[in-house]
Length: 204
Image 1 (cartoon, rainbow, N blue to C red):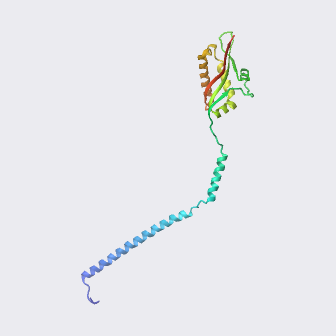
Image 2: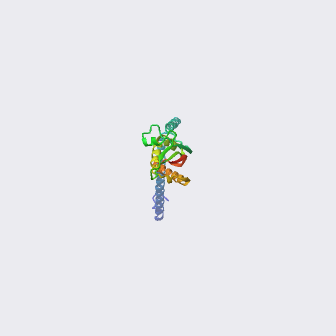
Image 3: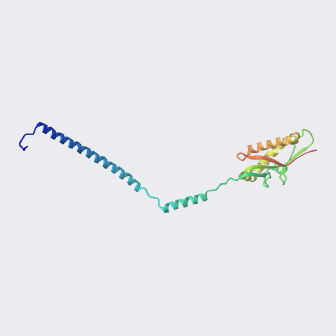
């Protein structure tokens, strides 16, 4: 076909379709390139952020470990010692309670006059040991609480009548009452048991 010959209608339609198809191809390829560039940009940005974070060196790690060790040494280590600890009640030598000082001798014997209801006299003399299950409870009682406990014992024992302390049943009731009173006044310190190492009632 020469250049001067007129183009047929079918050829014209076919040429236009080829042009449209090429244009669509270009649009698809261009879109794919743009998407690809965006993905590369995002990946590079993320990698750039990682590069900007300071890397911890071996020296930094060792320095941090040394600081943690020093801090751990400076903090007090509290180790709970659990077991059974006897605490003999003794009045501290610097006690400023005259009633307690008069009622307690050097061996820790607590002696009180019982209520007889008449002119006769009766006395109760006890020596008490407490049982605790923490060494720190033992220390706290010995160093801070023994005077308080003895003072409460004297107050309570002085209210008793002779018949309250007679026999094994009276002794057991007294023990339970003293244990209850101690634990109420010493909380959170907990006393497990009360032992009488001496329990003497004398009436005259």
